[in-house]
View 1 (cartoon, rainbow, N blue to C red):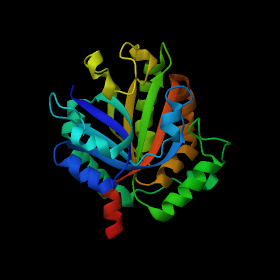
View 2 (view 1 turned 135 degrees about the vertical axis):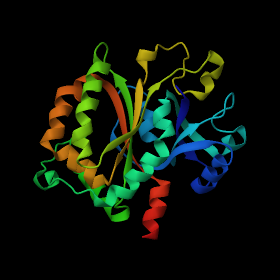
View 3 (view 1 turned 120 degrees about the vertical axis):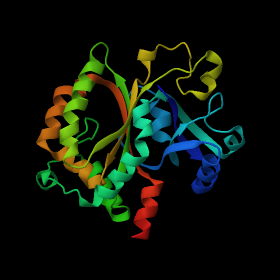
Length: 269
């Protein structure tokens, strides 16, 4: 299973300049602008994840025996959060074509009407509509009505959380699919090869048990932030959320982002 490196970066330089330099020597699979933390972690690394003003989310497939980010670019990084993941090779090999298809069809995907009958909850921590999320939806829609990419960091309850989340994932496919939602990439979090590599991993202690940190990631496409919120407002989604997802997770971080290639395309329309 190929290994990829997921980073959240706060930069000292222009994001476009940094990305162009990175792409000259590295394979960048995903690059997006962090917009809003929909769900904030309550246990794992909650301060750095939620209090840092991130400029960039990137998923990199590094060359063998090379650091994911070249040393020459490290001086342009003010703060970073790094997770190493194993991603199925089939997902990586088909990613570009699947991603292009999702972006092309996004404008034609209708809403289901669930938002029209939505009743907000006090918080979005349980992945429900809240006044804060609705306000963010309205703000982002005015700036960027196109596709959004959600980053999920997942920490499972033990035992049984992984199985329950798998059941959620299977039920998620048709529920999200009718709103154009699609899990573009999923992967298992893996440890650095050795303790000497731990400096580039945000788990801090290489000896830390794998079940004590993030276990999986997913990167999920929606045709727009309104499509995402339409899903949360739906009884069909909340049914599987309550049945499978909530009991599966000990902690999670859900970050809404917009990919730079999508922003560029929207600007040309």
